[in-house]
Length: 427
Image (tube, rainbow, N blue to C red; front, side):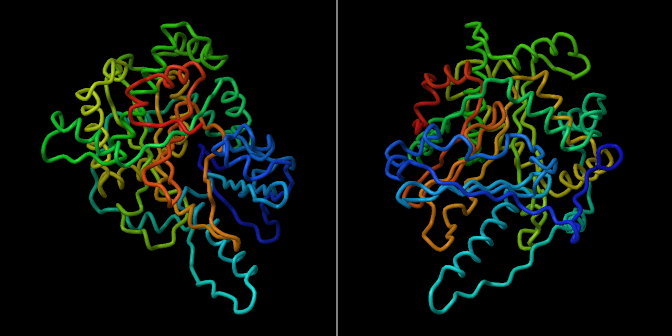
């Protein structure tokens, strides 16, 4: 960690940071997990060897990769947990690593003529991004400028400490929130029906994508759940009380806007910069902010209100062009501690929502030599109010939705008809 929060990743060939790899056996048969729809409660408690936030291992070092392979009873199957530090790669980089690992394993397992492992080149040079930036610049949105680029002491302090210490602090904070997560399935048929139901409230020249529909409805559903929990005075855990205290004491410091709600849509910028074929595996995502009034997000979900929020998501995503991205990256380089700003923001904005779409990740194509996966899932729960749009097994269509929020909010989500009309609970 350098000055003013600027981090760097150094590969020391004389002191390699080798992955954490462990194996274990588990006294449950694959058929039992399948019958329970692969419910996390039946998985080994120690299968997930890292926390939601990147933390150091037993040797005091943050590992670049954490792997745990658990063999099921009677050799009926394998549970494979794989994690890579987000300091180093994003989802595309993670998929590149695990796909390459699978290719080599498949070759090693093959009898007779070995399949050829195609030569590929992967890059971690940030100059690939910088060289692809547009010559033109366009100002970032007011919301992005205020959130990321207005210096705040709390964010700077969090950025300047070591990643290991920051991980310990954020892990303690995350453990206070009483997180609860569920997996849902959304079919293509239901999405099309939903799109048709909103058509009267969407301009004819705008076509809402699947991600627009899911991101908007999931955000409104979570905010509705939080509001209902507050009305019912549900105990949201220590973190909820801490947020409430910080909101009262430090409202001006954290620039809380009472009537504004932000949804963070995590967007990959490779195709927008024309570097999809570059082999770049480093972090190449930026959070695009979708601004809505908090009153609208908390109101009952109707076709009209949903169409409005979905259209705002569409407009925000379309706004991510070359000049905008170039200005964002330039400013990010001038304020290296800005990555910590959203962490501080969450303290005073418990209703914020993060959306990431991983549905195109080729996770069901992985083959280590013994067939492809039957089930792919994130860890049991993510950060509070985090929604992941996941791929589904090739035998299915649609999307799996992994949603984490507080226990209090989730109890309301599980009986929200607007959400359950679209999403089917898996577990």
